[in-house]
Length: 89
Image 1 (tube, one colour):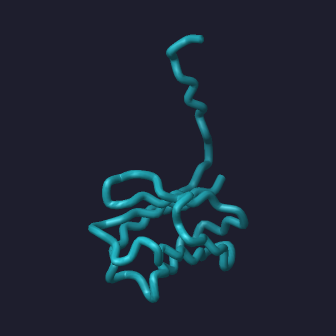
Image 2: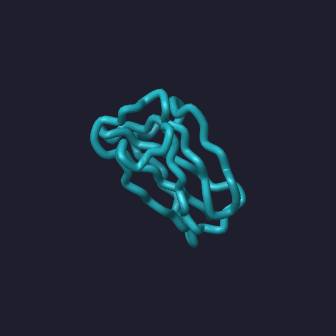
Image 3: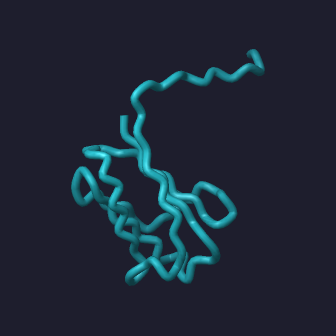
């Protein structure tokens, strides 16, 4: 197997990135208003060490095409700044 990696070119991808910290949470949750008009967006959560922790998040609730609710209660209080990226095609 070759050591080269295939990186596909993706056209017309839209994304939203939000930096957040513990003071932005309400009862361990964060309302993310991404305005991407996406029925099934992809959500990726990064901790303060830039590690992907999406699988460890309590829940990600899709409220509508423009908003998600991120529950990170198990991580509170959050150390440092975290990020959430929302992507739609």
